[in-house]
Length: 278
Image 1 (cartoon, rainbow, N blue to C red):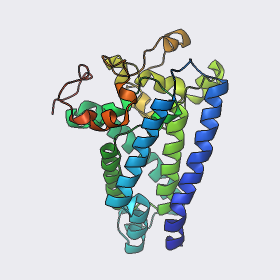
Image 2 (cartoon, helix red, strand yellow; image 1 turned 90 degrees about the horizontal axis):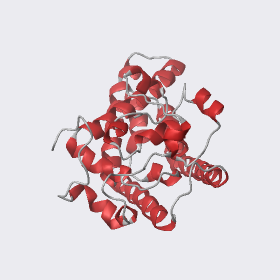
Image 3 (cartoon, rainbow, N blue to C red; image 1 turned 135 degrees about the vertical axis):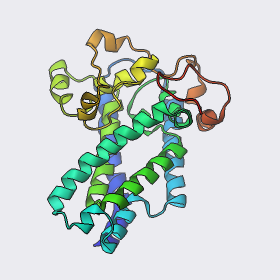
Image 4 (cartoon, helix red, strand yellow; image 1 turned 180 degrees about the vertical axis):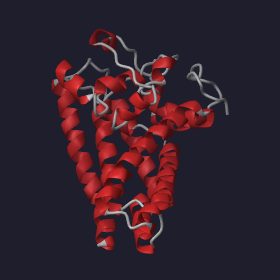
């Protein structure tokens, strides 16, 4: 079972990614929030960053989170394995706990200057669509995987929960970054439970205060619970300017520039409120 899961994992993730990406891209075409600038350069860079991150993980962490979860389960390592927690309960707690972990990690990447240098590659995208969900610096993805592996070992998270969460996280990120106009009623209903495109659009505003709101990727619960939730009406959402202040040129659409951005000495804009300098 363990060997089969390790073999099947990349194919399951790739298939799900292709399906969700296609659905979101088509949805953006038929129900866009706004007209986007030419996509070729942006898409090439955003997809290039996710390919680079995938290659880095395969070389540096070939076992990754699912393989670590299998090892922890076989070795009896971690809280859930040590206390023989029922599978249904460990699955529920694992999915909720990992989602809270990603929320906390996202907050940290905004508030700690060294991490913000990496994360602002994501925010530098001058437009918001399904490919923005893939636009993360490879080193940020590497650090995120280390954090997830640590949580998997500490809690003994079941392999199926790890795989399920990574698929869910990837799919929900593509959904809430999409340039997709949901109906007002549908959005009001969904945002009570999950992060919607309207909710996450606020987070990608050029305004520093807005960037420190709506950190969630999947459940909207954490932003409500920790006081970081902000909801805007449709006219306000339509007027939001996306990206990093001070860079409305073509640089963020270039792959090499995006890759070296964290190491440039010149600050693109004032750091968001609460960020500590590195």
